[in-house]
Image 1: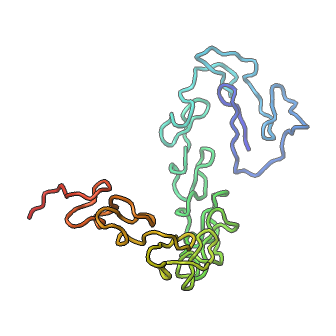
Image 2: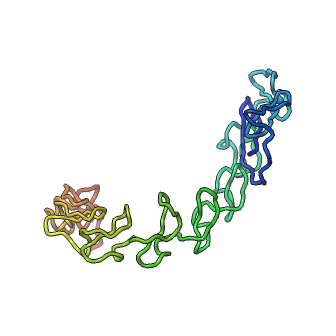
Length: 258
């Protein structure tokens, strides 16, 4: 990690891709250089120590002198492909969108790596923590029958794991639990609920309610998430020639040619 002083006494540390080097200082072994502080294992000299500037100027940490206030204070004040450093817009990236694949933006520089799975070849996935394409799956379809592609939150991200991801992986009378990727007893499209009930897909439980708009009062209510609610969701919920406009069935305002 490389650290340096910024305008108005702030400190900026940047991760370096260079090989690590022994620290120059620690909490128990402070810096011996005058006006130096131990930051990230480095002795950073504050050239602006004791320098007082007017309101329209600041002390340049690289010069130790008062200079006019910077042209920028944050990256958003700079044009594309530039970043704000020491109060000036200098070449650099503000985000991954300014880097050409297969590179990503790290501390203002475009370096080799991936931002999303789109930056990786088939048979590999993008590991968020390292920004590197590693062998693994991107989609559930990349895995064989009876397995799914583990995503964020699972112990083996980007790897095929035993379990279901679609109803076809389960037997009749079972549903695929999206939380555990296990086939559990319950209702599904292949094992529908009795009339007057609908299947809650994420739990496989039959709950009182409608299965389709056909179970509701056609033209006045429609089926939404297993409940008959007033209005309409699509034109198919309205009697011809009415259309669904802003959730209500009404005449089509467009003049027909016939």
